Length: 358
Image 1 (cartoon, one colour):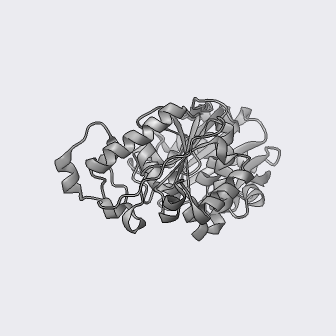
Image 2 (cartoon, rainbow, N blue to C red):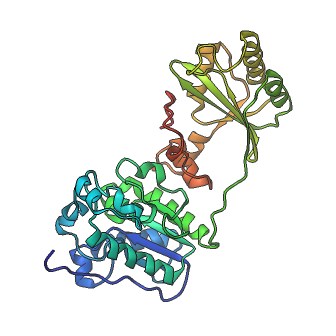
Image 3 (spheres, rainbow, N blue to C red):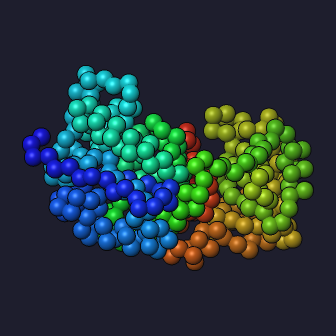
């Protein structure tokens, strides 16, 4: 490439332990010699202020420190065949396309990734905010296309160094999709909370998969109130129901197993005991229940099992919408904003439910 214009990172005046990593500088950033120049810079600064973060206390850098031709990584990309011919065992990112069908050549990727990770190693942040898909590719070695919605807002471990990484959308995307600003600000607020400590802290949850009908009966007989209830649907039936009366304990009750024509339970009698125990619990108005998109769940429970759900008083989907009306209402988004759970959509084994959470 000719006439390469590089842009230096912004070193912080103080240390708030937050690093911001974008894709690459644009031409206005090159003129100012700072990442996120021009209008994207003002949008980023506005979101940081609303999240309570001072930009001049953060390390601000980019995955590529030069202006990309035509403002796209694809302009410097190579094909999969060319990538395989090069081979690289040091940087797993180079084996993953940064844009569909576009791999970064070693001559560009190795020095750029080395520079980026050296900057992070010198700054030693407690959390790194990956602003956009290219930063997610550089920090997590994940192909960003079709994946961003699954990782945004969750805390991840960096692929090459043990930094905490929180992906979110970049300012340029927010400019064209203004409704996403509230979610990015919420992600930045989460990054500020996470910047207080370097390690990833996950809640400890004991998820019980029952082996006998007695386990289900005993659990539901002793479950506290209120309790969370959630169903999963598959192939026109309710295949799983989950219950939890505290954050540390939950039971996931399988009903239908598509890999076994007999179902999950050994005998029809045992399956009937399980369903009856669940039905009794759902029909008990003294057992207060919290649901996610409960209008869907209660409709299915009535239409498939003829079970009227009593004592349903709260819906996390509705409550989240009241707090964040601009934000998507799917369970993945809700969990990423309000919990410290990992992104289970990346590790769910490809299971498809007919239940919609949007």
